[in-house]
Structures are given as structure tokens and as C-alpha cells.
Length: 171
Image (tube, rainbow, N blue to C red):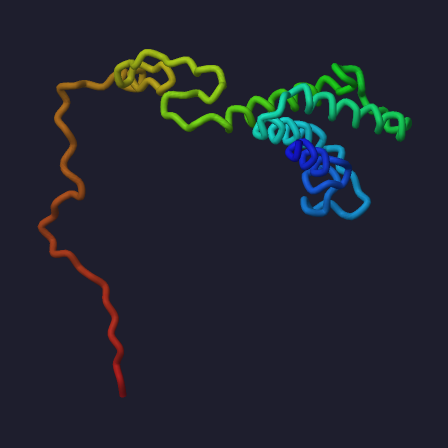
């Protein structure tokens, strides 16, 4: 399967999609960025889902790589306590990325939530009734509706309008 071979090559250590090691992402040579672990797991899940491959493939591949790294670097304290030797955080990030990647494969539609749970839709309320919109009714306390409106702005004056100007005097 050519897609699987490309995916394997791309996400191997220092492969072009390795967010934690590859220079393509601005990582210095022979460096590792542990802060990108969650992003890398999400990205791996996303690409697997977008490619139409099963999520278990990403979990197994990620877990085997995690176990290999734990054996190879015992002092790094790599968490393999989750499913298939993944950490629980890696497992959740792969699942989240996979769902987004699988949703991205769907045809666009104005009526689709693309596999995500539909958001709650509240009943429309009148202006000033609150419900997500700041209510302005309390600010009207003490306002007399029979009070005449203020004069139009800017106020009208009988004095002429003066303009400042400059001119150049040449000798």
C-alpha cells in the first residue's frame, strides 16, 4: 500500500512530518522538542484520518515507536501506560487529530457539522433580554421617558464659523 509506506517514512524519527525533530519545522539538527509531543500526536492522527486509514494504525504505530523509545532511552521516563504503549495524552491527541482528519475528507456542506457534535442552538430572544447578549434594561433604571430629547448635535450658534489657514509670504 503506497499510502502506508509514505506515511511510515514521513513520520519516522527525523522524517519530513516529524514535528519534534525535522529541520523543516525549524528544529536544529540533532535536537528534540518534547513540548511538541501533543501536537505531533494530533498531526499524526490527522494525517492518518485524512488518508482514510484506520485509527488503530496510528495508535499501533505511535505506540510501537513509544515503546522503542522507552527501551532505547530508559532515563527519559517515557510514559507507555495507555493503550498500545501510548501515553493517555498521546492516545487522546491521536484520536482528536484522527476525527478532524476524517471529517476533512467529507464533502463540504452548509448543513453538516463534519462529524463533530452539533452545537446547541438557543431560541432567539428579543433585543435586551440577555441570553448571551448583554441586557441593557437595568441601565434604563431612573430614565424618564417623558423627558424631552437633547438638542441636535452640534449645537447651532449665531456666530460665524472661523477656519484657520496659512499662506506663504514670498519676499
